[in-house]
Image 1 (cartoon, helix red, strand yellow):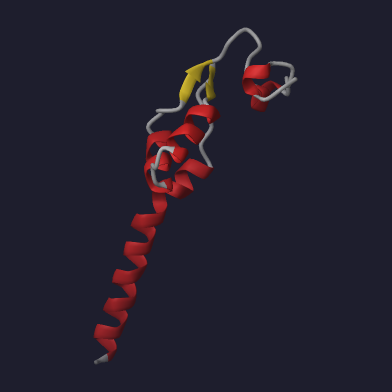
Image 2 (image 1 turned 135 degrees about the horizontal axis):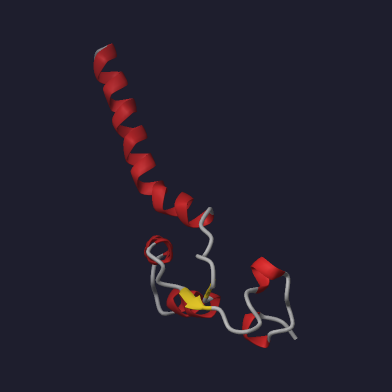
Length: 89
């Protein structure tokens, strides 16, 4: 194997890695739009029903878990933890 083939293989592996990891990186840095919250319960339900983490990340990136915020808002944006629906008491 020549030096050119070696570098071509390294570049192909690197590009493949980036393409496979991009949805995960995007999902970990995504926030819901204003006036919406993430439905963590539905996300966990999909996980227990057999969806892979990649499928969950892609659905999250498309806004599949965004739900309209209620009058209490979103605890991850306003700091309100009193609403039982979002894990408060």
